[in-house]
Image 1: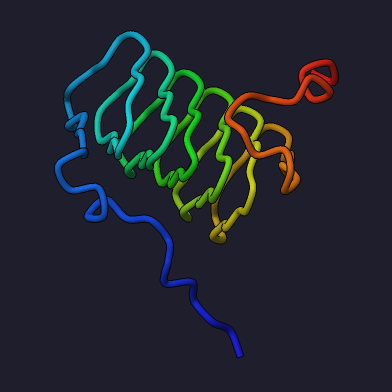
Image 2: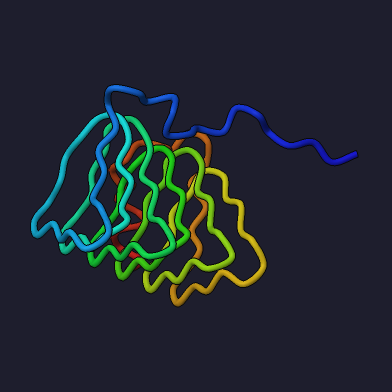
Length: 136
């Protein structure tokens, strides 16, 4: 009856293009990349991917905006999140900001302080449509 989507992106798919911000490490500033980034430490700045995956682990913290096609959050994010493809919120995720998503999967226990904004099929670029920018 219920089928699990086996095509969800994973870090192994981006072998050779994966970066890790380790526990105890801190990145200050914006990071632009293609591939995958896993945040186990702290990022004070924006994470911007034209293609790929951002994963914020249970101990990870991002204080800034995240823009990527695929985003998985199990840690804490203080800023807006823009997932043009798939957004996954784990049971221990804490987000303070607006979520813009194509598809979203949320586990029981996830906490959000912000708005949920579905991106329609024709409006999936990483740039927000002008209509959404005016509403904020």
